[in-house]
Amino acid sequence: MIEKLLVNGRFVVPNGQLAADCVAISHGRIVAVGSREKLNQFCCSKTERFDLDGATVIPGLVDAHIHWCWTALILEQANLMDLTSLSACLDVVSKFVANVPEGKWVRGRGWSQSAWKDTGGAFPSAADLDRVAPNHPMVLSSRCGHARWANSLAMKLAGVGPSTQDPEGGSIQRDEKGNPTGIFFESAMDLIEEVAPPPTVEDIARLMEKAQEIAWSQGLTGVHDYDGPQALRAMQLLRERGRLGVRILKNINDPYIHHAQDLGIRSGFGDEWIRIGGLKMFSDGAIGSLTALMLEPYAEDPDNYGIRCMEPEVMERFAIEATRQGLPSTIHAIGDLAMREVLDVLQAVREEEARLGIPREARRHRIEHVQVVHPDDVHRLGELDIIASMQPIHATSDYPIADRYWGKRSALAYNPKAQLDAGARLAFGSDSPVEPFDPLVGIYSAVTRRRLDGSPGSEGWYPEARISVSEALRAYTEGPAWAAGLENCSGSVKPGYLADLTVLDKNLLEVSGEEIPSIKVLGTMTGGQWRWGCWHEK
Image (cartoon, rainbow, N blue to C red; front, side, top):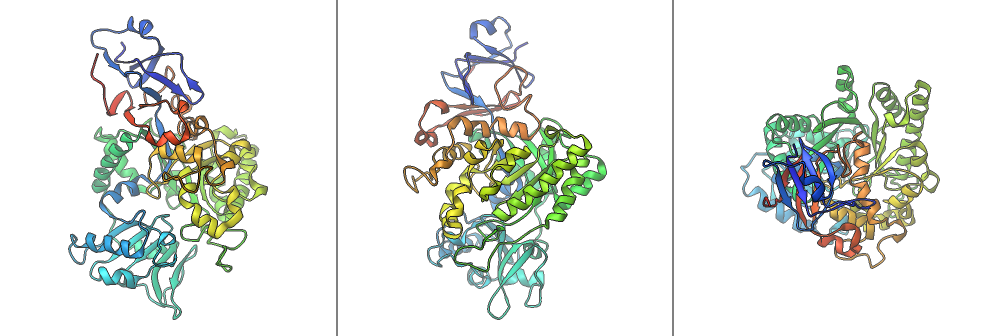
């Protein structure tokens, strides 16, 4: 029996519009695609019919790189995103702590010193926070997530002082006397995070439920997550309670991979709602904190080459052990030296797989971000069948700081066109909460290389890196499906595929790039259920 019939729609896949105006759905899957006249004969009195009034239906959009737990938690934290001065950040903090009992930890996220006009891009200090919140231990994550800003009370509770040593893979910023300033980079962030009380699983689940409503409103039907065990616990809680409405590929961060290996968990373990992806590792930092690992130093900072978060030999050992046990690797790399080291590691992994007779498609390795790539390395992802997991909104968000510190190296930074031309597969995401997780804004960024306000100009930033709408749409649908091992049931509008659909008021493939941000999401369906928006039965 056909449970739902979507009629009078324009059904679109990345290659074009389907020769059909009707889709039939049963048991959460598409069972037929065709004309209303053809499919009506298979309906009965219980079939729900939804007239889409000519709206465009595309495969459900998937964010292939998101921090789902962080994205949820920020809904109740001090929000410092998009503020253009230190004084504005301190004002937000002051107002936030006014409603928090003294002595209770305060968290926040989103500050970016490079955007502050009143400090010239200098990092803030604990003393700044002490002026507005001396009695609340506080830790605030940078926008990029690779630095923490703590006040004096937080450092006191963490036991951080002049004698505290920099941990391996991280650093503590210090003043001219050697005293910690309140800024912690990479692994040094743990010095503060370890004493700040974590949220409960119930709190995370409650906020994830709120976050998924926002995701539905923006057309998202699935996410690939990169957070820790608490995130997985909360996801399973929602799944158990029947409250999970976005599909999740859950990657496992390297501190926890041995637990999965001890249990014999392989990629693909789970179901179509929560599915295990691969081993996540960090090779370097990020441009926002000036910790991305570079072959040549940062402009204006000739002694700074960034931070190596994991030695290549260790990374290779982890990745080879993972592939032997059925898990691909997904590795964060932003700087050009980090990219080269990760590619060398994955080349060694591919050689080991060939020796063991493991076909390449059985291990869908990924590099996350793929920001600065040296010209000698551009071709290597395609040659090694490595997925380029990129976030097009990073290009438009980061271009001023990239121009400032990377200069002409930015020509091959955030460049999906170069990767497509070299034969790599693309999977697009947002890195939320670093950036908003609106996929239409991501498509717009990839197609125009411009911000929503039109900057940096009509041609966009390094316009040769622009890709087509069809290519961008594929990177939000077919690309994530391939990365998750779901290409035979997700990422398209076909019989047998999951009924995960996004309904738009305009056809993406027929509008100009400038029109994309004005497109409205009229509805989102996952598993054959309307999660957002609806049509009256007709």
